[in-house]
Length: 112
Length: 117
Image (cartoon, rainbow over all chains, first blue to last red; front, side, top):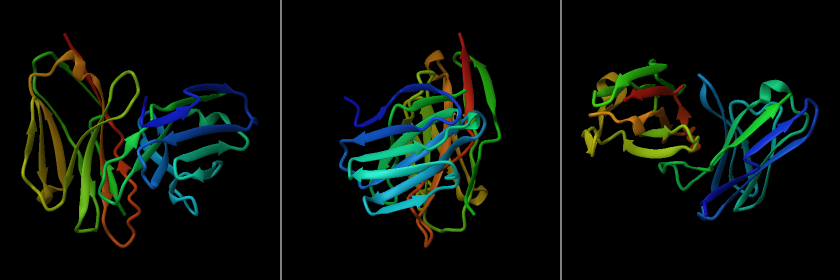
């Protein structure tokens, strides 16, 4: 089983619908991140969390919200999805400042 | 501000050719870490290497090698004798250990490498 698990892996939805992407990890890391990948733009940070009481906005947080339900769970919500939120979303975890990110397998979201 | 630039959007080579992927970064912090990730067509992100700002030694791992030069703020990645399985998108990333550090990684735009048989 993957150390960082994302659900769903693929989702097609319509404009205006509420969507939740879930992430769980078994690595025991405190830090969790949500990134968005768009062609030609690389990965951009949406939100990150250092623990259940510490949640921070990244560079593109507008239109998104998150919840850190437990150390191992970090979910991303789109309250009212719009087509330009169509992207590949990655959850990631790390330990400490200098460590590498461990990524989930990605969730591909299409908003029609 | 921190920034990572991968100026090469797409590179196409024939199998067995050597190829270098460029990465240029910007940061005001003196302590930072650089990374390379590989994203094969299946979509997952695979960690390749981490290098800290105090270690400018080049590193070689099999057919992969990395050239870190602080003087030019570059961290280039070379694949020797490329193979079809090397076809992927490659990302360079930066995290700084400074007063504003959050541990987040700043990614470049990615370079798509196509290795033809």
